[in-house]
Length: 190
Image (tube, rainbow, N blue to C red; front, side, top):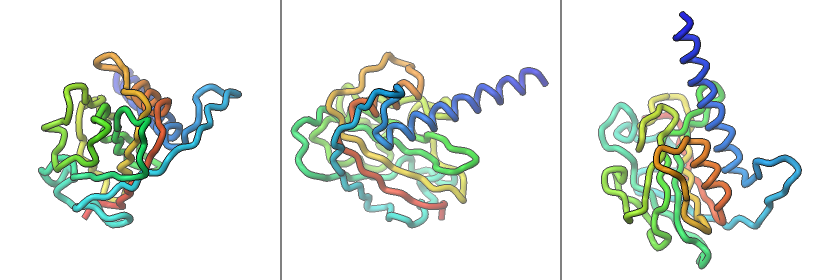
């Protein structure tokens, strides 16, 4: 019973840390109290030929399917300061928040990723973080009742983390470098 309890506490701590880091990254807030890191954040438009804002996630992109990550596109005002792009997919629920996918250091001139992009990442420096489950790459969503947010971030510098860096460290790195962001939100799973 002791090991199970410890494993549950560790998993809960990782999920909470990831959720806090993601919330901070989404809001553009600094992690140090009393120090404002406020800056103007540009807007990106995030779309997909397979996903629609406020509509269900197609079954084939969930754990009930086998398509991997869905295709995503992003656009916005020219951002000459953008040095890389990052994408974060998170499960937004009150009970079980999770990060399902983090891909970073996408070349700044890319404006889309095709389906199952985790299998063919663009650029030599593009990487993926270990998500809440501990898996590296796309973790297909499974909660039929959850909301899923595909957030795209334009960064003023590439993400610089050591291989195997913790999820909160990668998310903080993204948050610290964000100059523009956009989001596509889907609800439930078909």
